Image (tube, rainbow over all chains, first blue to last red):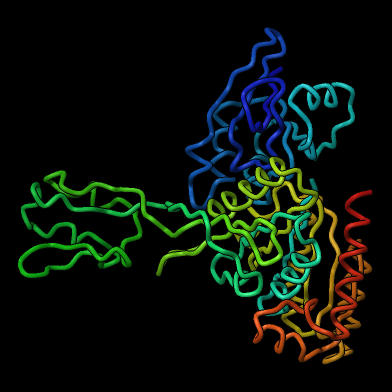
Length: 112
Length: 291
């Protein structure tokens, strides 16, 4: 399983970024190898408009099985993500990546 | 740290007057973020000192390298925004007309055109008249507010609040439901909606409430000037109570708002019925947020 997090930093102790479109980083956990892969999202963050759909596009390229994020994705990005076979868990802001992953594992994260 | 975002959907409902009042009531417990950058006017009420300023860049702008340009005019022919014109035998670019699309860069046979980041305005970090820190911005002529600018103002307000151990971030959001509004919602603990009893007041309230529901953020509503149209106010209160929105207050039409604004004061610095109502709303909000 590949699990994507919208993250404010690049480690397990970083906070989940509440933003989907303008997230600082996308961090991908490969559950088999337990390796973290970090994708810098600053190019999208610096777009004046259309950040949500640009990050949704990235999800199509990365194809994670699960996305864990905060408030987002917004309506347009959520519509774009519908065709992707990816489960979306939300309201994980105020948690670190590690805490969010544990909450996901224990089934306490809200699924969209 | 809790973040309150004040939104209205419709413009002109009294959103900034109420945000300014909250900012004065919160005093030094709060960091203020003015994200209504298209019509930034909180500075009129809170008298910030514009102490720190930095340039803000958004989008791109074409520039012509005059050493490479052969005055062939292809850019002027290709540009769909009419941004290039001939002036004294030389092609020049009107930055206000340039959309930064980059078509000229692709079509210029000499490679004389490049795109550079466009300066869109300035971001300020100020101390207000009540001693709180305020993050705000001013757009250059022709520049527009964006999700990017709102994110920048909000993120620096949130960082300052963490650094200075403040309890609240108070955000004045933009009207509408577009990109800057969506950007102002990220990480919010609570949204205060300010509406007025008009047809467009209700219509735009329905739209903004729909957006906030998508992000699962709790919200409450204030009906400002509720007594100028009791029928509409009843309709709005039905909408509020049937959509899981907290009914925060009815504020009567009160000329003290205009008088206060003319004196560059917030309503809570005057003696008026509205002052008491807003104080009560702020007390309710802080209780809600802290628990």
